[in-house]
Image 1 (cartoon, rainbow over the protein chains, first blue to last red):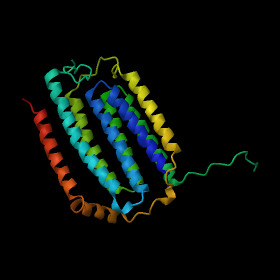
Image 2: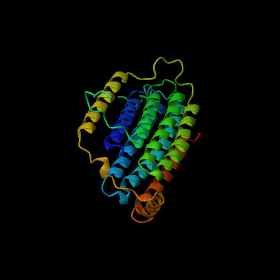
Image 3: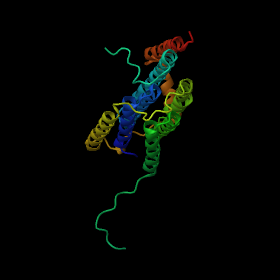
Image 4: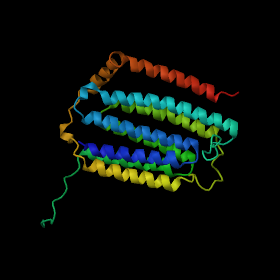
Length: 103
Length: 178
């Protein structure tokens, strides 16, 4: 079988790529895509630790990953609705220009 | 045959070869998501990444999760994202850079974090793959998952349903044309 840390390294790469997109991209939708990448990385970790852990028959990692997927779906729906709402009001979704709350 | 000066590394097994191919596919498409300046290319790379992650789940013998990943991420979330891109189109054309002024800091931070995680993950003595338990049939596992949802995980399951309902109603409220 594949060693456990191969999965963990792949997940670490996905997480760091998502972190970069969330921090550095101008477009709000691109930043949301980065957050999706990070959630996927976490799910890979959960399932990999479940598969290589002791109590496989309890399916805890899989249950956790399913709940994470559901929360991610809710998050992306609300996030994209916010993006569209902001675009309606301001005709831009450039994160640099959305600084109304800046003191 | 001449004597080699060093012992050959052991040949990778079939699973390892499949993992390496899936991981390369996932990594390349994740890089497209992050680096490509065109938002459509980002979204297509995201779909490819979701497929790659579904393959990783299948390799980990989590078949239900692999199917859910394709249904929810590839089917629903990518569609939502592409709709959002189309509804807010025209934003990114004519700009010189797709990144903001944090670009350099964010790149350095991400690369450093990856290197630190790499160093930790390679050096920790994880339990070897030979210790992983042999799983029951996929059907048995999926049946057990379903039973867990209505027994020991009943309250989280209902909370999840409520969360999805509230989130979708809230999304409708937010995106409604006033």
